[in-house]
Image (cartoon, rainbow, N blue to C red):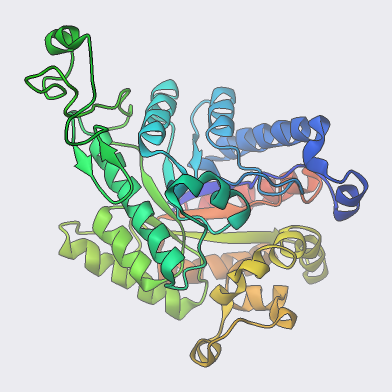
Length: 406
């Protein structure tokens, strides 16, 4: 099993601090504190043998949580570490110009000599994605199969298709619903120094009139043909099937053992149908959270950390607790009432893994038995719990748990 450390990251502070400093997102000292904490934790994770440290892509959070900052944090953390991979889980593809993203990924992978990964997401937060996707008339989505959701999905898949072409060692042409290359597509792009390109550039870039007829993205990634690809955060079977077909590693959020067993089986089957014969759980990942200690201690940590701050006050509003429904509740439909947004439900669903060393080992053993995922991402409480507490939890995991599954 390969382990990924996943800070959001968060500007350090309690709820009281966030009220007192409102908005904490304006405070330079808070940003510097976050940067320092993330680097320190990334170095610890590297020392313990974690495969990667990852961040989400989110913007405009004046409250100071989920300030992912890709690709800036990626480059900075990579420059402060030596071996651990660094990357996003993931870039919100509908919010990116695909060529600019391909160039960004190429540069990051070259600068780090292959220490990056590429995670991808569709985007669910209206506050920032609606602003950045406005010229394509895109919005965030809650996967309700409505018009906005389907348009977001088409944009996501189109950007991914362009990325794959951009990573190849050849010029390409493309005309889709949202993008066309070259632009304008039919007549090509004017290019006065065509003789220079005809002599030294990619032979396929020019037409007989010296206009750009295809484009080439450089630099290409250091890793060939591209860095490892991840999908954040997967719930539906349709997403699992798509990732298996495309050779992408899904990070599964559902914790129920029956769901985990089913989805890993589906991934293995679809991968085989597309020429990839994999062992069960190979190229599959999960996202989980750990809390170590007595029953009272883990409950206190979770409520003071991301469970109390993020899940109950923020992510729940987007419907994230739907991943923790029972089979009976799924049949009934509708969103879970706020009274059911509980730590107990998250633990019963096997998303939060908490307790003593023995209890945590039992849960991990069961996960291996049911799905045997190749990748395991741990959502960190960095910035929500005191740094020393977060380091203590990481230390316990690195010294007591990780060695049994690496």
